[in-house]
Image 1 (cartoon, rainbow, N blue to C red):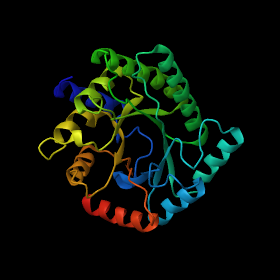
Image 2: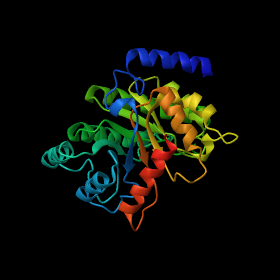
Image 3: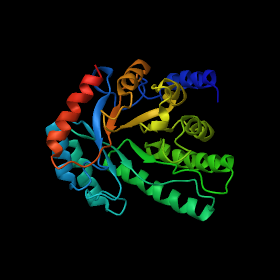
Image 4: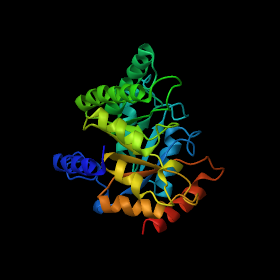
Length: 284
């Protein structure tokens, strides 16, 4: 899709109140600015839920994405009573349960495998609804060998569309992480999202090296900016142009969260305070 077409789509989504940062969206950050949160992958991966929440509160991180498979243990297998406790705990917290980070993916050429992935993804949507989260993150994980790229793009897009429709009924957004060899290319990711053609499906920006062209993420942002509902950020001193990226987010009206997805630290509180200070400096 050309840039002009994407901008027209952006205008439509903004008018409908479904573009990130538009007036109709939930979770507007204070004073229209986006805030800092954290993904449990990998920084908080060995913390139980209570410790993860307390650590975020103590360091000023205002939202969390619970990645599947980590010590927090909040998975689709938990029952109604435990789900209610999770919802209540976050309601009493300064930290927002923003999303669930799944590894569900729809690029397989095998319909049975795609169906299996869809069933799991829908179970996370149900979990998100019951615990008070806003979204569920899924991902493509690259192009399968010996399968035409157009076929894979169609398979991923149709999976996103089905899950988006299911989530819309439940009031849960679906976020496609820009991920996987080949599928993380901004042009490919934008093509997948355009083919999904569901207003309840958006992008999770993933701060990939492939975003950067001649030291800038501007061209990639032109492609994916209209779809962004969530952002993963990594090491802020990695050379990735975060100052430019944060400016682009602000200029676009994005008012949700950037979630730190960084390596585990032996001193998580000290590291997170340092990380927030650097984030604030880059975001000024």
